Length: 346
Ligand SMILES: [Zn+2]
Image 1 (cartoon, rainbow, N blue to C red):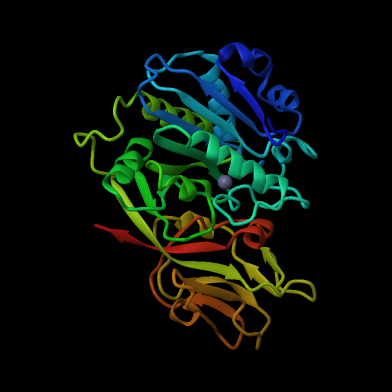
Image 2 (spheres, rainbow, N blue to C red):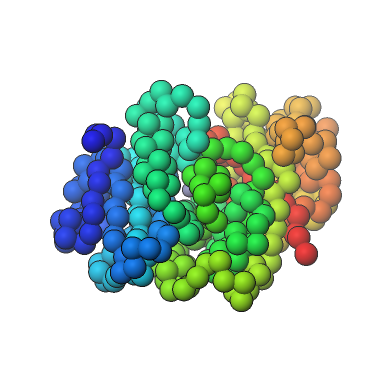
């Protein structure tokens, strides 16, 4: 036994969880993560795994999962459901925090070394529990903070993973980062994808999440070679762009004594599209140095290949780029990154 997360087996044990509103379910969980196992009709089949709410401000997957559970469907396979940062999701309003000041990011603690904190121990034990038996496939539901079409991310480029991406979304993203995300930790065990369902708090995002779950659960055999080989469009992350840690940043407005970098609103509309060479991203004080840092997947600095600052303080891209996950908030730019630069794969 542990007290790191709540365990439930079968629909009978989650009656309270499903009785009220989505917010009531958070109250029932009382700040603890939850791992639910729904036994399947055929115990010889490998299990499937659905995770959500690793980020407390991303409600769409959580609401979709509850909607799914309220149907009380049975599946041929065991279904694991993990509800992650339920504490952050109910602090200072509903779904207000990706993670709390006394926490780490719950999607950066999987497969890490010594499990020194409660969150890391929770991640370690959940991973051990769900991988103790065979797993067929896993889906981890998220939201974006900026405007993005829905897409699914895989950490590895195997045929099975790309098929799973195609089951979940029309756009796929190859993620070569190693950031201790859940889907990375699951990759040695089964195809595992993170599904980004658009912005939080939107009915359309929840509907997409539920649709992706339905396709995931209704696909009889995720390993079936007859499934489409992948999504309609596949992109690969090549660079991660951050705002340098000492730089204060705002979206919109003007540079000032307090603000070193102002980024123009609406850049996120270029996600999975194109920012053309010469596009101005924002402004710095005249004479200020480059406020951004771009690193490739090997950690080499690539800032000078993509960005420049003019003497009068214009921050521009110097070649055509396809951004993904461009954010729109200073907090998110600080807590994760400003954007990724991608390349479309054939
Ligand atoms: Zn997330």
